[in-house]
Image (tube, rainbow, N blue to C red):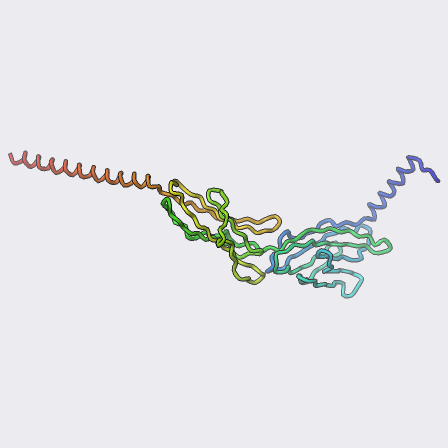
Length: 283
């Protein structure tokens, strides 16, 4: 068995590292949208550096399925592979980059998109990078609360409705009163509209609010619309409802009564004064 000195080992490792650096190729940038709207095409791009290697092919995969291939030595140089749930619209490739356009499926789903760059033989070295993309259609606005009066009395009951805009996936709706989550009754589940183009749906949910008999002050009501994706998308709406207690109403009535009494007293004083002045003038 041949022995190699420590110095010779260092030289050998340095030579191997130098060869690896000069012959390596790498993917320098991979652009994949975190979210993709099913109503429009998503653009994916892969940028790479070949150094002294010759490009053999660039391939794109959705999960384990090949959807795009670029091979500069073949005619045509670009081939598209439509797989279940996705349509590849096309792509463009250069000596250092490759872009592909895909139409996401109209369902709330996610997939990993991989760019694979390989060199010509005899080595056929391969570099790969992947990123995850989730199909999501964001709502255009915040949810809307309807049915809320500005003022309530203790013991009163009202029904509120919170409606979330069209989205994919459809939003799940939670209600909060003074930051306390309200558990839905059996008939208060989140409802959905029929699907729109791209699979978008609108959501709504009703809340029954009972004002406690001794309540007073203000009540803060919040509606939260949540899209169950990673990371979650949350939009909300808030309203403030004033509660007038019976005590406040009694004070209000008594104050008004007191005001009327004062006015009557003043009127009597004025009448008495006028009479006295008239009597003095007649003397």
